Length: 421
Image 1: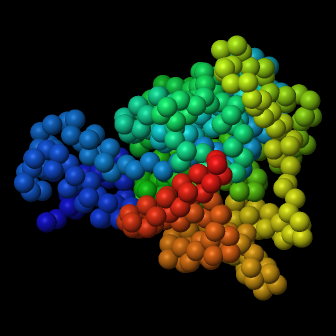
Image 2: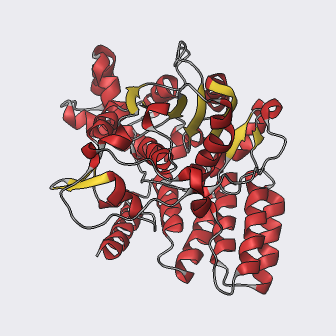
């Protein structure tokens, strides 16, 4: 039974390169829809798919498998806040900051953007976030704003106490963080995507381009550049950094943020001094956000505190070296970063940071087997390294290893449960 025609159809409609997720993933989705539609074989389902327009969306829903969590790769959110407060706000005494999250999945990313801005002291009425995804199913979940423990995977979980209320189904985001976020259904590779929309000052489009073939990647990046404000900032996934140069975008040189902008709009100094912490005190909560709980909630860290390098006893030199190597990788200098990691490992063979960066570099080059090996070495040294678990889970999912992906997600859930307990 051939499923090639379904792969071609998905490529034409949503730009999906079946090889990026594994042909078996498309086959599983088609078989699931065949059962749901009571079609005896692929030919019958193909005819059914052509006859009913709504069935195409149903197939897309089964192909798209969301995997995200709050403040995933948090350096991007720190860089976003720094950009807003140090660049956008001084030149925009009035007006609204516009932000885009695509694909927004179940809402964790756009809500993280909102929470980061609120915690930095930017009033919710000063910004508007559009969360766009091709899946109606995940948009519906995002609009509900209710999440389980698996969405809270970062080590710093204080934001949950500040911005969520506990309910029977899990945790519901409060109005102050969700008021400025709206969700829309849309397809980035559609020629008319957001054609009449004003430009965005900040765009998050992370880990979407890896699912496209080169021509579709070019179309998608062209759409993102069209939507990006002249002095705006675009955040992409670590595996996608090498694609930006083809479209004239340059790195913002923020380690591990994978942030890019137009070359003519780069500020004279890439690393502007941090604003005074005094101006970054979180905006006071309204009565609407108060809960009946009498326990105190942790204060939000100022931007200076959140961006300050984490001191690691006995590892100062290694941390500084890793930061330089990550900066190289972010600028697309993968070979140089890789050589630096290997040199570092000659003196510090148990450096999980260096091994993790080698995994990210291999992942960016498309060498999934080598990347998986590095991620596993990291987890051998540090079984609680959530970033390695998350990247390895995504890698296995792209390879079609559903069982391996599920084991890693369960492992992450157990770690989350222990942290919560």
